[in-house]
Length: 386
Ligand code: GAF
Image (cartoon, rainbow, N blue to C red; front, side):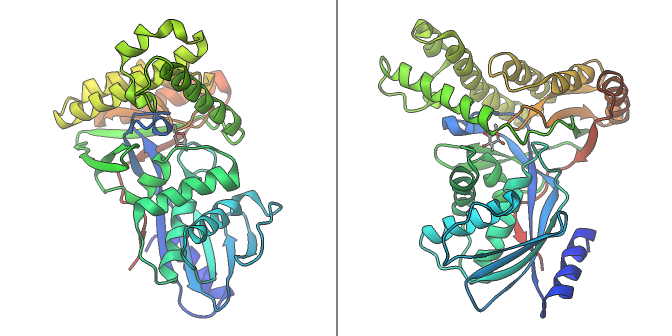
């Protein structure tokens, strides 16, 4: 039994009577396909081996009492009472999902939830999506309701929009709910269909390096990028009425109508349109076992996010540059929404230690601290534990 599993179980037993049921939902790292999800495009994330764990049991009323062991806080909310925005911000993810599920027509039972997580907070590894998916799964399961992973993911996304204020796409919740062990998921964010892509990484590793720059205040920058993309679509539609989202625009179409767009909007669109193409190319390369090509696409993705989408930061750029000089590193890029958080590195197994040592030394010299390190395999999506 994992430490976190026994921690939530023991904490539950010391506060409540009865045996809880246990649920787990992972964080994620995105291999490629950044800021494409809310443009109806393609993403290629995988679930990491870090997760939110919940011990849970139903109550007779319509109240949810949720304790975060990490924060040492307990929050209660009554689903029959109006939303109260003064509650601690972490609990908005839990309450938001519950309220969105109920607004969608289900009637949840009240519940006692005790949770903890080893997904680093604010590091761009989707600690919030894992919280939403773990608690949403727990609430539905305790209520005896069927769980549809896509609908649960959509409820998590809606909770972020309506109760947190980030107009995120569907990627993080989707992969946390539906990931498959040993695979990345190619998600078509328009059809909401996903294709598992095997990650044959026996001689390679995925190394996540955490810049330590928290992206907690990034939602305004994130929402601004989304607005830039929407502006691009609105202007392109004046001449290309069939375009519903940047997903429908090819690089050639964009360049043919470049003069219609303000320079900044054009650069934002270039990133999204190019990133969709890179994501599909990366899937092709993975299937063909061409990992060097995947790596090159990752570097290109980073440059595009840095220069055109402008969501990187000096710390992430330094981590990518330091990785680039290590033999055996195939590719590196920032991952997630940006403005801080992590890089993901595709590395030959024998180069992992050198990558970690070299980036740590370089980062320490430049920023006075070492990056966090996580070497991860692709894990499974949200589930109840036996
Ligand atoms: C954040 C969002 F939550 C995702 O929906 C996605 O847009 C990502 O940033 C950028 O690719 O993680």
